[in-house]
Image (tube, rainbow, N blue to C red):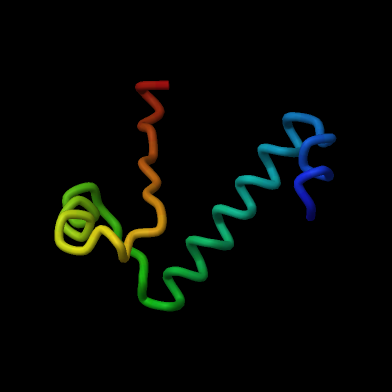
Length: 65
């Protein structure tokens, strides 16, 4: 999918596409043993070797939405 195709999508379709892309990235990272889970564990990796971190995802608790 190209950027132009994404820009013409409806917001709900765009969100579904982004969610699927995130899911694919997380599954791939897990399969490659390169997924770190937990706030403290991730912070430790980012402090020790920040160049090894591609991106971080912080889930929001439902009660804080």
